[in-house]
Image 1 (cartoon, rainbow, N blue to C red):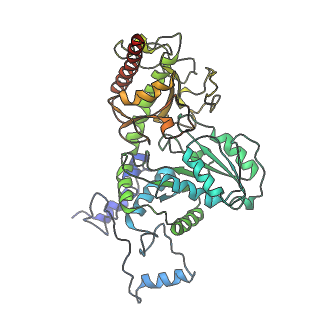
Image 2: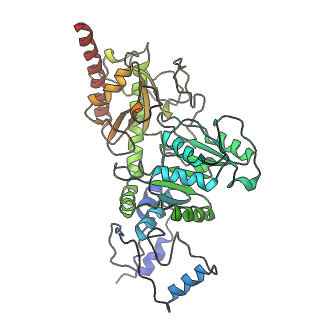
Image 3: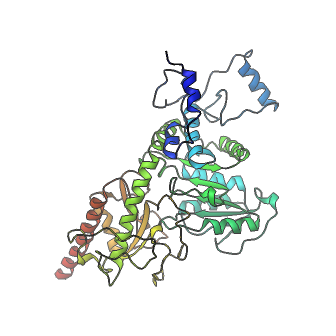
Length: 463
């Protein structure tokens, strides 16, 4: 018989596993203790657990923990008490997320739960923020209710605070990068340096660029937030939020807050999240590659003097030319800025072309994000049509894009953004790229743009 212990010892000589391997094996069950364990994780549905016998070692440990004599680590508890505190499915998902995010991760019932938990954790009196997801701004307003909170622009001068104010009445700098809805990146090193100089804390919402695309901790983040509903869930069937910190004591404090806010992730959601994390690298890398090609092709359609066949635009050497176009997918009728006014994406940074539109986005025009995003660009981006009616109708003329909000799923979505965010430009469309073939997605958009123009021409003839 093969000696299981010798095999386990031999595994100790393996090199550090890559990210894809960690996603599959970080929460592996001990096969020596459970030699016949199921390959897929089990779904724990119980909300409560049998208490250990009062004479057992487990009960003695719990009594000592309650008395404050020993630690009871809820990140790896010896026993479970109540599912709001801990249970197996959630713990396994958080183990994988901790490995993925290179910190201590905690899950929440939604992305906005996580955002609100971050605000409560730092309890700032000053918050520096600009643009980004409108839901976070709504959560900030809820947090500010009844508190004296000053909200300033991200690029404003930061007030200085003493170190002891980092978690009580100090400065919180909230950076969303890549930015919703444009997919443009912001300079984390710059904001980290400015935050440190002011004695503040830096929270980075990295929902639009999960690993392996970027690691905000490597650029100075104190806390990283994700709406796990998006790329971590990846199948449009999980509502989830995630916070990650570098310090275990911070994790413990977040866990305490979560327990008594009651914002614990449900068991089924944790199970679905864990299932989806196994394929995160495969999904996100493919989505990123396709989104980059689509964004650059759409950008080429907005250029007034260059054909969509050969131009990538004067937007910096980092851009590769868009894939070659055939007349059937990129006819001259839709090029030259006739329908597409401007496209935003991290791959188009730093921008050399100036947008003179008074409603123009102004994020990241001079920042080159290649070093910050070594794994690729966000699979979500935005473009502006030349007329509001084009943006209103285009998502409903396509076969492979679903007109819906949210993002990060395996299916491509295209949203007239003003429907979800009334503050947005009525000409703006947000695109979440899924796992369909690039050529199919490009052909779908091309036929949709042609249909728009033909319908408009027909309408004009009837007048």
